[in-house]
Length: 290
Image 1 (cartoon, rainbow, N blue to C red):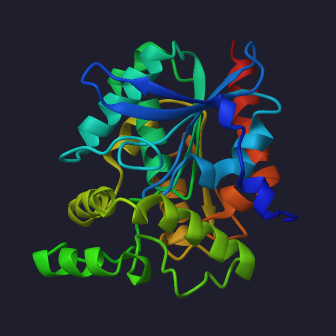
Image 2 (image 1 turned 120 degrees about the vertical axis):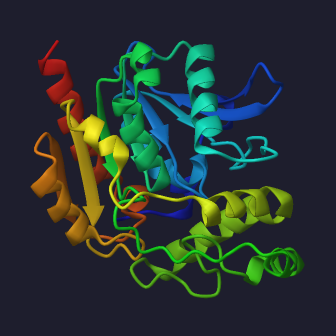
């Protein structure tokens, strides 16, 4: 891992705002050869496109990449109320607007969960998703501790946002699995994106504090009827019980490939070359069937 702060910068000219039918503005990033194999990138909760910059830059050298800031994240507008269905409807409308079909889906954390759903749910099938690589997906045996968003908790967060616990990040406690400069950079990027709009952060945190992941992904049951679904867990992940999740998938989902690699929850952000190897594996398997 030989990254520097400049690796977390993207070409500003390749960002585009998609205005949905309801007027909501969604931030997107498109890079790579226009005639290349298509890759849809979905970030995780309390994250945004730029935090995946090293991965996006790496894969866009080979593939045509579309990344989306989920509503309430990055530069995308927030929702008055969040639900999984609304988030997925927005992804679908962006795909229609950008005419993005016949793609492979790459997701991280909550985005990894959404990526599996892209492969498994009927509403996505018109886009003909070819395969999935889900990095550190949230939901299956997730270890995340949820804090109820009481009015008192909300007031406390608004009062001193930067020094309060964010989902997956704690600004004053750098991640010991990452170099100090990188841990601080990721936290600063996140805080700078959200601190200017506490309403945006509060809305997201309310959604995820109430979100009920089933013990097993319901979508895994359906995804198991497809092929070319790869789940990549990280051994040092503090949010997901990677080994148990990996063993569970191996036992119950014979058509889903699962592996555990070294690294932290953020490893696809900071180990883009390793992440690329699994993406290539997925793409090559999909292309071989055509």
